[in-house]
Length: 298
Ligand code: NAD
Ligand code: MG
Image 1 (cartoon, rainbow, N blue to C red):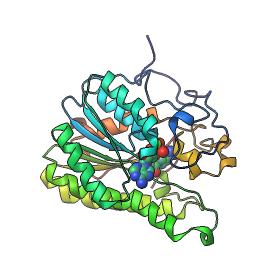
Image 2: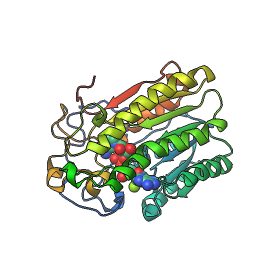
Image 3: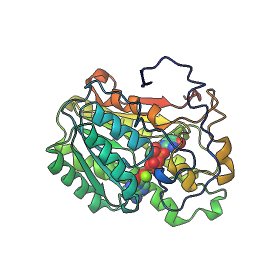
């Protein structure tokens, strides 16, 4: 039998053959251009109907963690809308094909989340095309390493906050009137929220903000039956890391400092997002699920 996410195996040996080599990609970067292929569960994720009939929007669903989540949600029986930047159409179409191959409806929504009007439009179209919405995954993110604060431009600082924080706010606010009791919101935060790298001042700050936003809003929405939680990945092999997220020369060692001694794969994140979206986590509210290879967290 082919190995799936339930396979009993040594997690320190899993994916041991992946060795992220040095590589730089311009723009948001593409999964399809990664030197060493990432695993989004294309061949391994096995659904059990845990999200049957649900309707999900996953931002940044074209690649990396978002792609793995979109594939898993579809295989668990959800219809899935994915948002992404127009230049990521190639990655997005691959994910759309996998959602459809799972027998679910796929909606492809290119556009720039740093634009508030687009965020509101995105929710409106997703709701119309899916016939409702009950899972919102705020996952799109921008990460650009800058060694010296003197070189961190106002434009980058603004774009990082717009992409990682403002878009989450705009999308969540626009989605709320459509979310009924039982719905869930999942925000992608990061180990950087508590263990910031010296060259990720703006990015790490947005992730700490996402944690506070998640915990505050979770309390506000719990009485309405809407649960808000977060997933905090550690070093995961995705295009963001090769598109300026890390210094290029650091990529060969990427993830080796974790207790498991290796970077994570997007496929290893998807089950956390499935759990938080499904009724199995009905008493889990305002939680941050760390999926980081063993790095200590507060
Ligand atoms: P990724 O590049 O595959 O995904 C990020 C996505 O964000 C892109 O695909 C893009 O579609 C979207 N995006 C960026 N700017 C946008 C904009 N202006 N408008 C619309 N979409 C935009 O990389 P990933 O690592 O899978 O990132 C997903 C999330 O995981 C991000 O929030 C990232 O901060 C977080 N994260 C990643 C890691 C890691 O090591 N890869 C670790 C912790 C947290
Ligand atoms: Mg992408």
